[in-house]
Structure formats: C-alpha cells, structure tokens
Length: 584
Image (tube, rainbow, N blue to C red; front, side, top):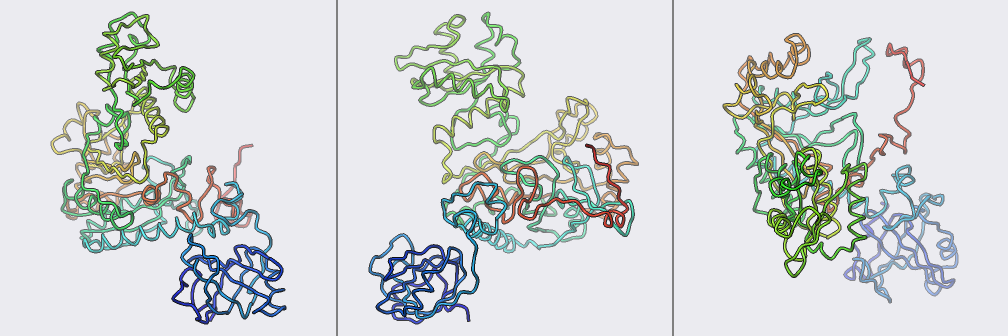
C-alpha cells in the first residue's frame, strides 16, 4: 500500500493517527536541526516534519537531500502543527515522519511547479505533463470532468441514449477543411476525420433512436485562436419528432442545470433575439448582454450636413460609453488608434462628449450644432457624462468594427464580470450566405438545415431572404451551442443541394447514403451541439480554452510536447501508396 490517505484529507481529527502518504516534493525548508517538506498530490499539500529531537540523524539527512518533484513515500504520525496555515485544509496538522522512501528522483524542472510559475507558455506546452501538476491546470481539468459528468447526468435523466459514431468517415464539404487519413487497404483512397457527427446523428434518428447524445471529438483543419483547436469536443445531441421549441426547452434545462450544479447560480431568463436584431443592435450574432451599449443607427441624424465621411457611408452607427466623458483627449486618441488597428480595420472614429451641463463637444463641431449632437445622444441612449463613439462605412464591416470596440470598452470598464452569466438564444438566421467573391450562396450552418416553415418556395425567387429553422445558444458573448431542425425528406434535401450548386451527380456522390435513408421513413428531427471546451472555459470564468484541455496544440496546430505533426518514413509512404510533392 503506497498510501493510507491522500495529501488533502488529514485534519485535526486525525491527530495521533499513523499514516502513509505518497506524492511529490513541492518544496522543503532546512533549518539544520529541523526540516519541513511540503508533500503534494492531486488532492492537496501536507507538511512533513523531520525534527532532530524526535527523528534519527539518517532520516534528517535523507530529507535534506530531497529535491523538488522527487516522488516519495513517508510513514509517520499526525501531530498538531505549531504554526497553523489557514490557507490550506491540512493547515492544522503535520506528519512527524518515521520512515522515508524515495520512489523516484527528479531532475530540476524547467519551470517552478507553482500556481504563479516562472515558465512561459511555450516551455509549459513542451512539458505539459509538468504543467498539469500546477493547480490552475489541474483544477481546470477536474472542473471539465465535473461539467462532463453533469451533462451525462442531465441528458440520461431526460431519456437520451449515448451512442458512439465513427471517426474514420468520408470527406464531405461542410465549410472547413477536413483532416484526411490514407487507407492502406484501399490504395489512393482516404478517410476523413469528422468535423461533426452530423449525418450519423441524423441516421440514428432514421434508425429510431429518438434521443441521442455523445461527448465526441471533432476535427477541423482551420487557423487557430484562443478558443479554437484543430481537435475539439462537442456535446452532440439529436431528437426525433420535435419542433424548435422542444429543443430550446431541453437545452435551456441543461444550461440551467450546469449553472446551478457547477457554479451555484440560478438563471431563469433565456431571452430570445432575432438574428437581424442581434446584428443591428450589437453588430454580431453572439452578443454579450451582461451590459448595454446597444448600437444606435445615426444615418437619419448625420447625413443632412456637408460631412462627406458620413454622407458617403452605407451606415453611420454609434454607442454610448458610460462615464466616457471623463476620458482625456490623449485617451480618446488611443481609442481611435485602437479601432484603426488592422485587426479592427476602421479608418477612424468620430466622438461627441456629453457634458454634465447638457451641452455637447464633438470632433466634428464644424459640421454639427448642439441640436444635432443632442439627437446623437438620444439615438444612442447617451446621458450626461457619457461619450458617444461613432463609426461609419460599409454596413457589414462597420458593424463588426463597432462590435469589437464595444467589447474592448466593456473589458476596460469592468463590465464583463465572469461570475455573471447572461444566456441568450439567437434565432431565425439566414438559411444561406452570399459569398461576395464568387457570387454564390452557401449554407450559413450546414446543408441539412431546414428553412422556416412556408419559406421553401423563396429559394427560387429570393434565396437571401430565406430564414433557417436554426438557433444558437450564446453565453456571455460566446456561442456555446448551435443547431437546427433538419431536412428529413429527400425532395427538400435535393432542392437544397441544387441551390447550393451541387449537381445531382455530386449530391449523390457526397450524400447519397443520407438521401437513400430518407426514403425509408425518416422522422422530423433536429438537434444541437454544444462546444464543450468553450462551455467549460466560460463556466470556469475564462474565455481561453487551452487550460481546460489536457494536451492542447499551439497556434500553429503543433503538439510541441510530442513534436507532432511529423514526417513519416519512405516505407510508410510506399505502403500507403503516397508520394510527397512538397513546395519549397
């Protein structure tokens, strides 16, 4: 037996108990006549004491030679600690060691295994197995496990069946690039790793499973960012004989359950917002509604003067920054520089100060009088002491730019409290999205999304006006889940493929198996998939998912710990019937 207790459970109730502990040496303090060692495992830290009055000389010498991260086993007696530590659960006691065994030595780690480490991100990624020993990462992984367990508990009680679907599938066009896997037994042919189990969960509905879920790995070969990895995890769900309202109710319930069980937070309101309103009021389809600063469209109150910047713009739009009139000119100039960054792309920013005495002072006083500026304040909801920030230009671009500014200002103003949770359903998305470069439409979600009832005929006349029977669940400005009611009959699916530019032959080659299945009595069905990595991060008070993944990739899609991806040798290439044609 390596241990009778773990390093986080011993308290004053265990005094005079003989115990055996095992773990890693966190640190030691050597006073010559007495040595203290902090022993750490997954559960916590227990202080060990080696005292020359009660400990043999040989044992003290052993303790003095322990290095950081040595793996040791000790036996001893729980005693009351003279100088108590109220910061840890075991702070009332220590172990008077009677026996010490070194189970494994350790070289000096490349960074300190502490909550606040001296290791940069690159070095911690390379030695991720050491990084996991640190409380922030360890606790994030334990937190993820708790969330996953609660998801399974809730869905199982709701009658969902967990079913695994294949990882080696067929490459299909679903928006992002596929990762492909060569088949040795079928020379020249390739599997693809699934971007999602979309078609399989629909086939499970055809198979009569009725309520399906799985917590599943998905793969997309796309550029990375803080909340994106090439392999990610979905809570994937599908239900038969349901309408949109049924699905929203079930997954509102799941979200409430997680917030209550994991965070101890009760959330009753799940507002619903049309996609068009989300874009108009917030400039994006996943608005953070923990704070205001809704957009005010200013065309009607700005395009009547001789200010060409506004007159020539498709959209003039502004927000009111609470208390922003206190900003100095230098601070506003820095804000203007911020929106002109390439990542945002604005050409500049106009502003108007709302003074406490009811007057206004703007950067365009030459063109607009006090009456005009009062209308700006009215449209944006600005009050005395606020600052109105205005951007203009192409409608879609300027909304995205102002949305970025709104989020940046909220961050600076402390309005994005991670302990406050504001869920939101965004509904009635466009079914199709126009690619301005090619002039062709593609599916905003995926080609199996059903149009809203009664709108199928619009595909022939006004495809851009067709609304999807689709919905996204947003939490604190992040999309945590999305789904739709699916097409479940062959004729409608064929019509959709036609409008997406598939010939009959291409549709059959790519999705013939699904079309064939629809001939055998496919029920009406729909579903939703949560992004587990992002959901866990937000519930954990963060927006970066990396620490909630045991072994993440870096921003280049590399695992620097195992050095992957990597070349394979010529024999493997030959066996797979592959030949490299690398561009220098």
